[in-house]
Length: 210
Figure 1: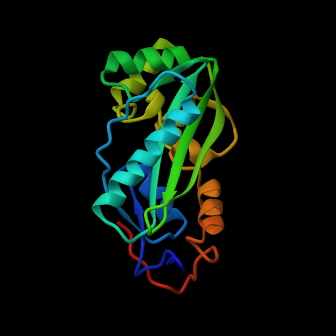
Figure 2: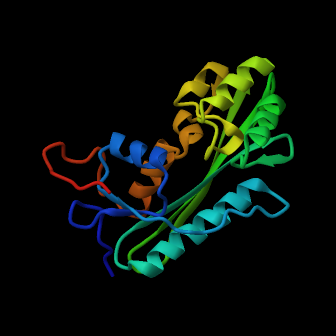
């Protein structure tokens, strides 16, 4: 049975309301609509690469069950320092603590993503790891950065694509993975699974973005 491809008439369903993921998909001109999955981001003990893939699958499945018939992409990103998973801060104190822990050290940013095809089959699941080294961050810099409000809603309490870039000394691996979606790996998966026949898409074709 043939499976439909992503097109302006049949856009990708993004199982996320993340502004960063939506910006990345707009950047590469992929037709999509965004839906919140409303999946709670609880991390179990064990391999964080496995955990983010499980959460990505749950998010994609939740959105597919609500709106069947399109390709669905779910994703989840965490920051891992040694064996500790650093999620999104719930307070200024927690954000400050995370940033001071990251100061002068290398950490991993891991994004798991899952593609579900229009029949409901999980077509591709993958975890992508990027290594990030932070400079030595002073307490005054942390105080000022937290006061900007940017750390909230960000895994690890920083945004590499925003003001938080001043703390990032080096990156080994996918930059867009640190932002929230490893675009190179995602496009490869879309082509391998048949969700796309070719890429980049026809520059003359109109498309909708959600």
